Image 1 (cartoon, rainbow, N blue to C red):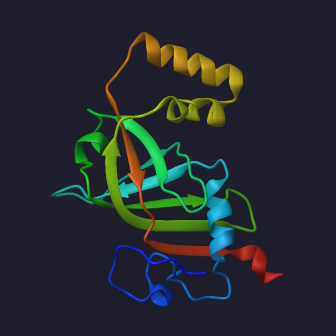
Image 2 (tube, rainbow, N blue to C red; image 1 turned 45 degrees about the vertical axis):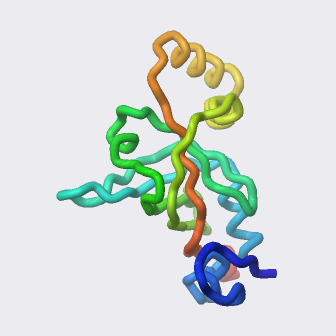
Length: 163
């Protein structure tokens, strides 16, 4: 069932619920959300005045139907470019054939990280390395922000559907 969003459009054709790639290789909503929820490295792309977009990898969290959450340093290049309401692109992919990817874009909100967001290090590095990373970060803390991306437009390809 399609859900309505903040845009003034019928739910059946709302960009927040329609995969803009109408291909037999496009993932269903459930498939793309499950793919995005898996542990993968995301790539965020955001506008940078006077240059091409800044495109960098990030660790993230996502639960189906929710927002994409990632943390960045307040004083990092991407931290300085992000502002509430800015629109960013985000992409995750499989690394081996048959290839799959989910790409989305939408507006962001900026907030304070919570302890669960800090545990992304364990998710990506495993228990031992993740705890070592967290200890290193605690020893030399840097101000961070939580970025939440609200998916509005989705693009996906799943080459497993070829055979």
